[in-house]
Length: 171
Image 1 (spheres, rainbow, N blue to C red):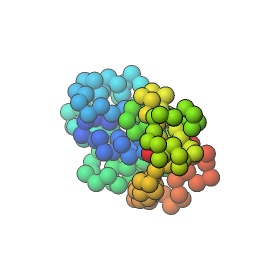
Image 2: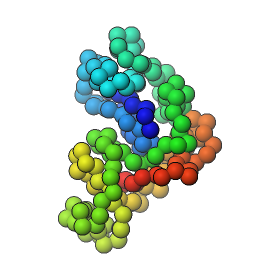
Image 3: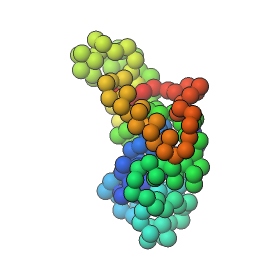
């Protein structure tokens, strides 16, 4: 998944859900426009913004997000980037720092997850960047449903990750 993005402070929700789909999205809610534009340029990333001034000044590829509705925003990014959402690797990135998750053993997460989770779950993932531990919890099903809705709204009929190695999941 080669697409890389930097999202401005107005697009936190879009950044979160693009990360959930498995895309590399730098997002810092308190970064100023100069920082955001510089990150996009330095990383060779596409800048996602709703700020017309920032879009005009940026020396990076820009997708000016036109819609308020998340489904329309995802559709726009998928079309303009373009993204193959059918090949997305959902829940393979850290929702906090954007790092790529790696599999973790039960021994590695001992003391870092609630006792009940440790006793009832076998599979874990961790973020090498921030150290956060993820597991398949009860809300993951709801997240997958929401991701499927977003992908469908973008016009993709095949389920995301169908037939691909989907990578670790998150809690």
